Length: 260
Image (cartoon, rainbow, N blue to C red):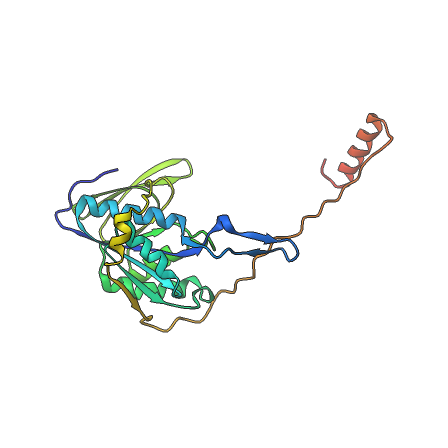
């Protein structure tokens, strides 16, 4: 879904979240708790957001700024965004980011994004780890931006956006003005891989490390520790009875349970 030239370059902010590699998660059978591998990656929906930001820049010119909040390791996710083609990155130091609820995180991100005055903010529809899908909508509210979710196509014409959305019974086309915040999903594009040239160029691109502009708000949501529930199976096995008798007993049990 391509659009014409906007007449001016775009400032595009793309949010990046670093998550554990879900393919490397194992389950401790003794405790039922997940064991995360040491590998961390960019959340999958964010990869579509990064790719779309780069394509828009290639069509219309401008700048792509990758923004992430988290511990020092989040630098790896931002470096990948730079290697893919982002122009610069901002790392918000929040060592205990998983101890904050989504609204607190959205507030920290909003402080930085607001200062950039972007034309577009691109966010993954949800994240691979907690899958709340709350950061994007909360950020849009804090920045007073129109929000369009489940985006599968983007066209920019002047100050107008034409967007194709995935909905339950097909697809929907909507329009809105710049600036806006979009939530990217599978099908929006085919994310590229970083080239050797891009990896080398990323080392020379600005990666600014900043402290939160405001103190994180206290937690309003409490998360229980994830676990895999035990599987239990109960039942009755009929042996040494005829098929007719077995059917009779089954019907009697179904009636007793008020299932028929």
